Image (tube, rainbow, N blue to C red; front, side):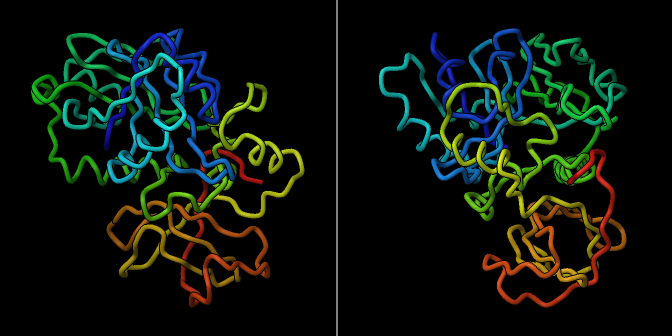
Length: 293
């Protein structure tokens, strides 16, 4: 994962005009999940915003960090905010469960969902966003020495695989370079997990996102799938046996194949110019911890 830092007196206000969610909780020490979109409402990146002591930190995939930084800097104008890519300064690790936090001698966040001590910030994922989701997952963020000192007890590849699998089973969307600008926020279920505020003021992409919500034109939604063994890739076009078509947005290997998230058309017979004529695959649809549709 990469990390962007927003510092300066206007940091929270600047983000308020750029992302899909209300950023006011950041001022109260709480993390925020949000999308940064184009003026046409297409999601460029999904941001996990953390109220770090050095500024607001945005955790996002490294392969979209540079492009997101470049786009956001265009909107700074007279705002007193500095935006930096600090991916080389700060390491990000994902931990599952408060027991592992305790084993790593890291304090769990309290009511706000974020705590920072001894150079390590801990933010709870999806805090108060989807009550039906019972998993406990946390971002740990700090400099390399601070993170290296923790007893994480696992290798990086396994940590990443388990984190991706956690995202899939929680129905937590992510956007990578291969899927950037393909979806409106609701297609990624961000409206279902507390990633969009429909009562805040204007922000980039707001007109399209609001129109999509209020006119009921959400024709694609993110689903969880079990895929057979094969060569699958992020952004790959797929078509299910029932005729629904879409693209893969997240993948994790399991013992007998893969689990995945995919944005799929809701109607089996609906034409989808984005996916072309992909062959039907033998995929099993799995439950998400929140209601879709």
